[in-house]
Length: 145
Image (cartoon, rainbow, N blue to C red; front, side):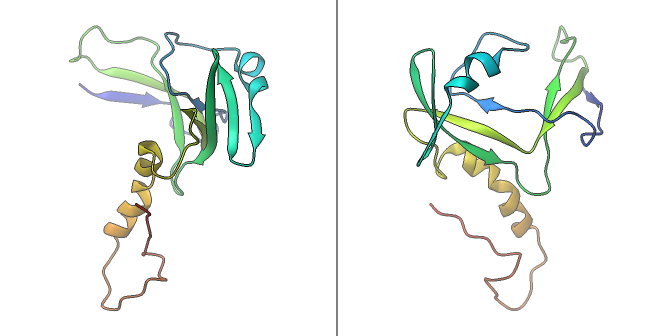
């Protein structure tokens, strides 16, 4: 099975405003987010807060790692079997998204935030090794645990 992506010029695609919610919504397609969700978002000293279907959400804006671009992909025709090729189309791109948790504010210890740190960690791991130990170099990185 191969994956084919069309519309690879991410710079010309329209930027998207994304919200990653801690739930599953059985809907594929556009939604009236501006009318029904964005209007409930409030900013406080600890980040963002909102409600969705009566549940309290706490959120923060998360940036895509430097050197990367987030893409929103659509699959117009889903294959019937796993062996068939998949054809995806870029519908928009993004540099950041709003990450939401139920009741607790997102933190640097959340799995998603830690996974996004992998890009920086990977560049450090694969960087050339020098004989001197310099923790201020661009190839050094600190992560909290």
